[in-house]
Length: 149
Image (cartoon, rainbow, N blue to C red; front, top):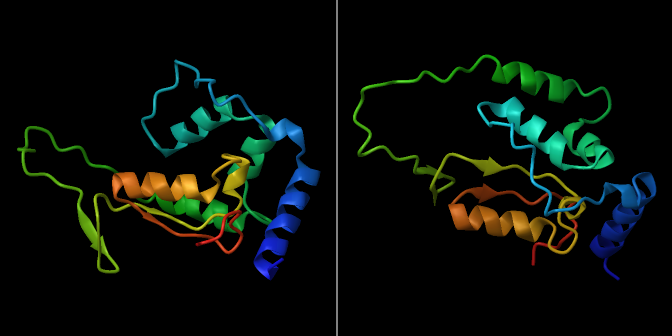
């Protein structure tokens, strides 16, 4: 067994020990119908309504004292969307280039490990496929549950 495979199995065992079966959820369950996505925090509310409590808390938390999480949330408060009305929108595009790669939108799915907690069968492969379908960039974590191959 390779070092990476052993590392993945050890990480999966640690996660399973910390949050056993209760992390599973019914993927046919729909979010509460009264949730409307209007800002970034609304995604948190939708996730909280769909995921089991242990899984949501794991995904929504940061490490140690959560300083980086707090600073990221604070930094996003410095940005505002400025609606522009009565403007021509026929030629608007979100296409951009990042690292020489054309993307359909300026979105990068940053490396985050243990995607198998959300999709046990496909893990990071499901996230990578979704990014490929919409033309976004995906970064694979060193703590991934699937190999880069």
